[in-house]
Length: 568
Ligand code: GP9
Ligand code: MN
Image 1 (cartoon, rainbow, N blue to C red):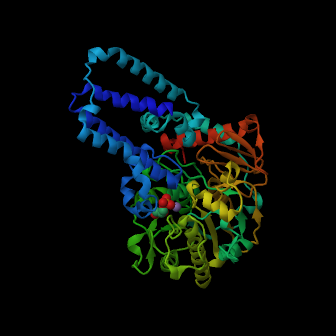
Image 2: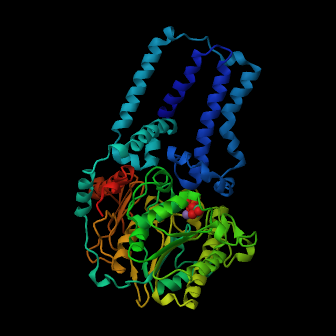
Image 3: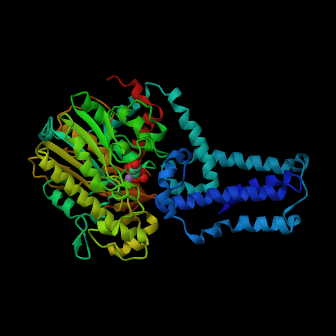
């Protein structure tokens, strides 16, 4: 409480330098600005469990498309946030003298101003020496600094990170390579080239989490098709999403680069003109046709610029689909129609192809017409949790149609199908109601485990199996490169081949949490992966450090645009 108070005290007292009749206006204006900043974060937090960072503010071009979601996050009783501003305004009108204090000259205020400056310098100093690990865990950071001071810190970070490319040197690579070589594990030789020259379809399953897989609601399977597909695929049930504020686009970024996304903002928006060494680009230079299918505005997340940069030759977006009121809901085109129309383009692509399909129907706030419900909603006090089940079930149905269409088109037998959940679907603010579905308390241990999303890899001719070693989105690229028989040419990948014999369970989440087959490090706490019992912090020290370095070096590559220096 003290940190925000110090900030508020400082900025409000600046009003004392104004002439008496201007003071009330200054207080009203300031109160409105600060309340709006606070309230914007309250709304954002309800869905993203995160704070708006400066790079996110610059995402305003995406705000239009977010409007359907924003209304689901606003409550009428939120007016309480504006009470203080209201009271100040009423007072300014009825008794302005109650809001004015004798104007202070700078001369008189000198001791106070000097004290304030000293306090601010100390605060800045503290921020700079904050344990660096905190900087990845924003929840912790806000608790330490308070919301308003956080923005001062974020501005410091902003100038520091935007200045990096100019300062970056080739030598940075030496440290990064050293770090990566340390944890390097050779890929599984028995899988090398097993799917050489096969097509690849990677499907991003919007907001699909692991907790629905294999589960039932009202006695019916929530994902009957995915459950069926899992039976003859490789299925990773301890697979974690590693996205940051760029959500879907971050997931695409991780899958295609085996790099971590950034801690602040979306790489697609902040570093779209960087040099990358991405999976589509590698495959394209080895004879693959590359394409993305996503029935949204082509400029959303800068995809129109980022896709060619990552090596995608074709991008089928909004204008390539026949979209009507009838076949759209919520954010846009319904997944079933999307999949069906995409087939027309897919079947025209020269083989082998590497394609990405991005689904949309299971997007917050999970709107879906009654006629498209293949399962009844859940019954709780959260409409978000309730509606999530029919939309997941709908996307599941779309996947059945996709696979059936692939079979009909004769593509199923020579196409690897990868399906992954892009990020969480149910935000922490709905855990109270989600708990009713899960039938257990959601403590720190459970909330980390809820960061799991499905990963399914279907390889024609292979039976597959369930693999329970901990893994993350960052591991998909090295896995695909190996089964496609594409040698790792020394590009910097932060993931490891999922089939590698020596691979040990490991996933670093973007907030600095680290998960292994034995341990969970999250929120400065060390837990057992098996049962959530708490260990002394030292037990997690090694994995905390390893995770921190992964994020640190991956960030260095992106902020410094280091691929410019990589000899290919
Ligand atoms: C936007 C879609 C959803 O085109 O991919 O993005 P999200 O809000 O999940 O990041
Ligand atoms: Mn998404």
